[in-house]
Length: 251
Image 1 (cartoon, one colour):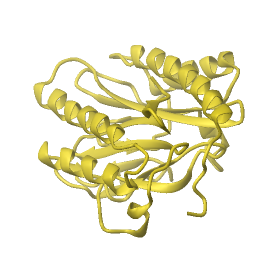
Image 2: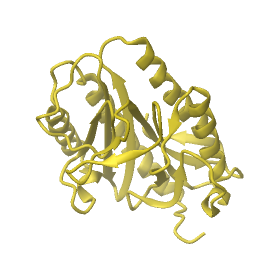
Image 3: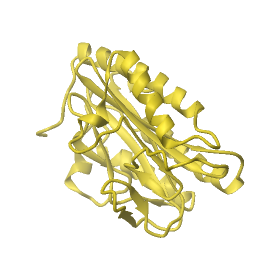
Image 4: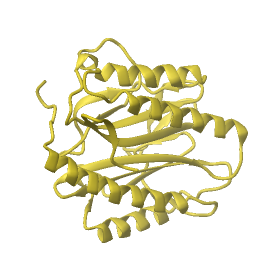
């Protein structure tokens, strides 16, 4: 398939190192998601840690986007601009998305966190984590891209929630967003039939919401929110397909 990027062993090793660095950055950012912290604080820390890693912020390479992270709260799903006006509070679901360009390759990862305790929201997040684990298990040579999409869709719907249909995961490597698209649902699209091969590197994203799948774009031109104003979440890892099975690079 045109556009699918097959990486050499050397390339995978470079991406593995970049993914390891990005995982450390993600974990450090996650620890700072607390009551009273601003989204701009997360952005500042990410920019500092990325510079110290020897890499560059992947997201700043996206035309028109000027930040190292995307930070979203509650109904914010993706692409949220990390401004000082966003102040976290107890009960918030905060999603942090960050990418690293290192050694000529991108890796991409996201995490959603609950500040404080809330049984409903804890269950909501647990379903997304479970869906991502199951999706990663499908990233094996001989399977199809649609197998990843199908398990996300089934797991999210079984939990009582809605996979987002307007956005997709993607291949990742020398470009941040590469072919093929990896949806959180199935439609029978041609891309779902792509056979997964050793050497593929995939940014598998689980994007879902409570109460409905429809999303809207904010006036800032970037932030995508749920149309119904209910909570949403995003979980993402960069995964290499190897002869030994899926290798998660961003943990």
